[in-house]
Image (tube, rainbow, N blue to C red):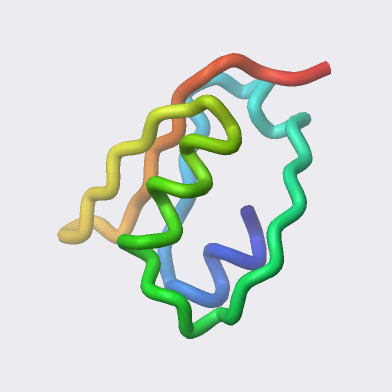
Length: 66
C-alpha cells in the first residue's frame, strides 16, 4: 500500500484491518492510470474499493489474510 500511496498521492484505508496482512505481487509501470489499476487489483484480491478523488482516499474492503 505504501508504494501506491507514494506513486499516486493517495491514502489507502483498510475497512478490515486484517487486509493489511495480505500480500499480492504485481508488476506495472507507475505511470499506469490509477483508475485502470484499481479494478484489476480489486479482482485479484477479491476486494471492493471506493475511490474518493476529492479526498484522495481509496477505501478497500474484503476478507483479510493471516
